[in-house]
Length: 214
Image (cartoon, rainbow, N blue to C red; front, side, top):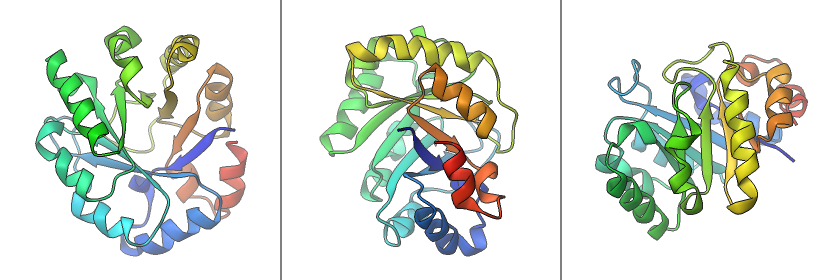
């Protein structure tokens, strides 16, 4: 069954503990934690210190998505802050050796590793790393802001990754514009994890909308 990862970017920051508890009891599987630096993407969110606080109020799987220009510089802070999965963007690091070194470094800390691709980035950009990673995060919107509309070119990428999945052991995660309709499309294409922000946190009945994504 597909995993549901509500994005804290759409939560109420003034009452974050309550919102985390609400999605936990509503049956969410992961917490999706978007880290933005105002440079790699045109927005700023939260960093590792808040993640550490969150790790102390929930036992949920902490899915950390680094939308930052220099993931190598900060990765140890997110490791120390109890991330369960650290996903970084292939576009953020030009050197293949550095990408492989970062994947290895995270794994040595007993944390899972993901690679993410923006809407304009083809699957071919990450194929060489698939045997070494746990998750591929397909962005179905331009990263940086919540509430955007789903971009259809993500479907072909999900299908391509799904055709490769049997050779490896990664999950396909999709983030951006996810609701019941687009979630169904992604699941049919082969998605394993759906990230949804405003669709879940703006709902009066969060259990109902989480269930609608399964």
